[in-house]
Amino acid sequence: MAERVAIAVDNALAYQEIHRLKERLVGRNLALTEQLNNVDSEFGEIIGRSEAMYNVLKQVEMVAQERQYRTDSGRNGNR
Image (cartoon, rainbow, N blue to C red; front, side, top):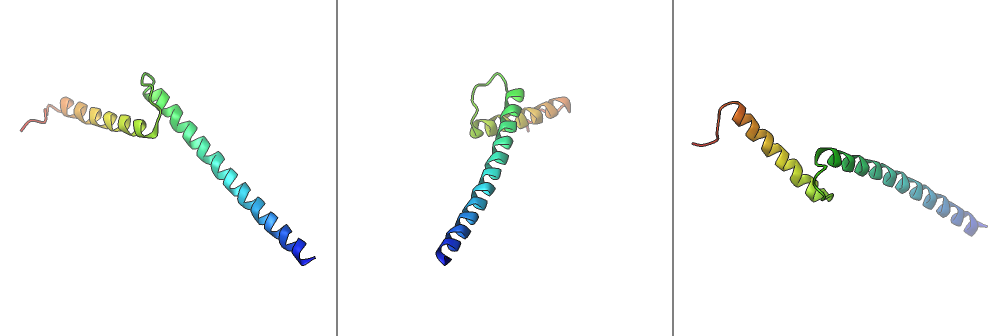
């Protein structure tokens, strides 16, 4: 009898862990889907979809904005 109770407890704990991990995966999937949609809208003409490519494109965007600021403010970055 004690063995059956122990198995039932183990099964319940395993079920809880599976449920927790499933919820975590669903959340991660939603976050990645949203990130992918943002990449598509921001950089739709570029095919790469990896996280590394996304990071590179964000850096390019930041540099472009900085250069635009310098152009708008009359600075050319030369010393």
